[in-house]
Image 1 (tube, one colour):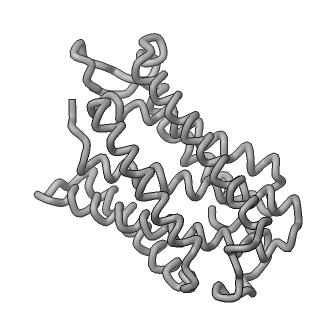
Image 2 (cartoon, rainbow, N blue to C red):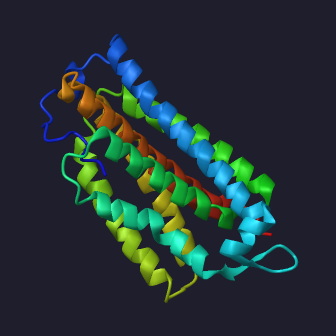
Length: 249
């Protein structure tokens, strides 16, 4: 989902883009962060609704009398795959309109948010809240690094994407093979990869702003896709950190 520049190529070196005094860039980045924050808020509300509101919970999850997750209903299983289906479908949309990009963003956020209730059922509320705060602090620091650094991070993009593909494949292997320490290794790699992607995607957003040259339609698309990239990085970092800091019910 990082190809939201609608055909523009990277022509401005990072060290020539003066990020500190550009009010337009600040406005653009605030728009991205605000949309991402609204997405996280919606996700939190949906996670609470699906985990704690009994009529909705029963539609999605099979829960023991002690309140522990025992499985998923048919609808719950379908909802788990909705974000993936939307993201795969979005890959076939060339030059999306701002409205289409916005629809993709909110569809993914709603689907992921509805599925996050599983973490509230699997872990204690206090550990989920603590992990969220840790993730938010880490995200803020990493995004600030990506925003302020004059080092070109584009060279890390391919490395991080290869790492992400490897992580997905390793996670699939983990469904069938559970050697000692394998889950810990996957979680540690996940934290490292998505930490790097937060900084990389933040810098990529800055450069995209300059490449679009004030094209309002392209800027709107970039805002939606940029928020989506950062949102996905945040959620994935949160889930991998939860493996370390979370206390299971």
